[in-house]
Image (tube, rainbow, N blue to C red; front, side, top):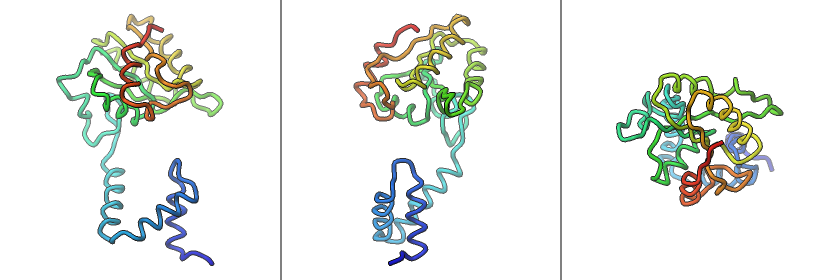
Amino acid sequence: MALPDPIARLMEELARLPGIGPKSAQRLAYHLLKQDPESVRRLATAMVEARRQSRFCSVCQDLTDQDPCRICRSPGRDASVILVVEDPKDVQAVERTGEYRGLYHVLHGAIAPMDGVGPESLRIAELGQRLLQGGVKELILATDPDVEGDATALYLARLYQPAGVRVTRIARGLPVGGDLDYADESTLVKALEGRQEI
């Protein structure tokens, strides 16, 4: 029995989301179809508004609805320390710890030559511009502990150590091949505390 076109299209679109296969898309679609129309409308509006109002912070490259973002504007943050991460979700993972008080820089990926991603594909030039403005004493490299993250950290260390900036890497409290987003808060705190010179 064929599904009605609108339901099939809904399942097809849900299946495009990361981590959602056909079975999960089917469960989500049927869940949404059971909801009252107002709940579904709120969800649809939230998705459209999030996409429409979100942009990249001109300073740190994180997702924001205001430019510069709240973290970059905060007078309580230590502007002499920048934590470099791969993705905006990594900023949220570190912020959940409540322990880090410096600023961030989001690269939007990692160097992955096999996938055609080189340094020029990332927000590395913007990081260099921030360092040229002065005042930054330490870069904490918090790229994922996998081959691409390690290659990116090594590239950044070689690029910025000659500029006289202290370059450290978060400790290996994180599992090799893991993502910052999946680490619990205490693991992230220990990784930050145990960072090392590269």
